[in-house]
Image 1: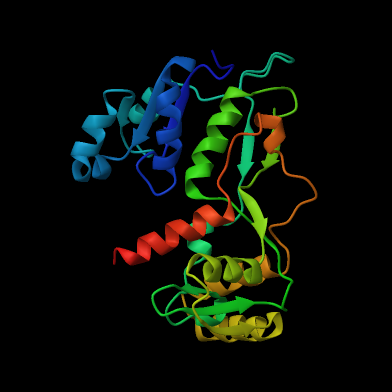
Image 2: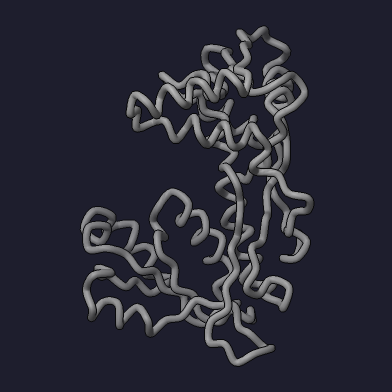
Length: 258
């Protein structure tokens, strides 16, 4: 059984939480209690989803501003058990960086931020040719990596930020993979320099554009903000993760169904 005996998961029905729960449930026997904490609104709007989840987990419905609900939630503890000291609670931060699937999207109105439009065979690449590496993690792999963090709780992972990912790539490598999988069909490819992106970001902030954070994040990522000297996947058992070819194939398949 995992050293992390009991799990309380917040956001289990959300975009990323659902992937985490999907990864944990097949390993149900490795844990004691598994519970999710959800809001009254979610309980009302996602009835069928929660009823299905009740077959494998406990569902606690409440508001974090409701004192009684908070007390009920504290009956379940999600932790990585500490064998070294007397601390009640040990933690691990699973640092994933950008989600690979979302990184590919060419955002309408913010095309200078970069991305790929498979249907139109159009791409906007960030940075100089051959540069601009970025560390990406697929949403499915977030679940896998969180699960493995729970299953491989050790002194090294205790109270630590675990920088993990699926793969590291660059805009040019992504473009090459799209072209390879689509049989070399010609694309309309343009490029946004980091300097141009910085100017667009500054102008967007000045104009009060609520979508400016997209430009800011892309600029940070393009400057190498997602890169680190060594990833921590090996500390949590080196789980099998997806590669660039998988993500590109999934995006092509997704667009083909639209």
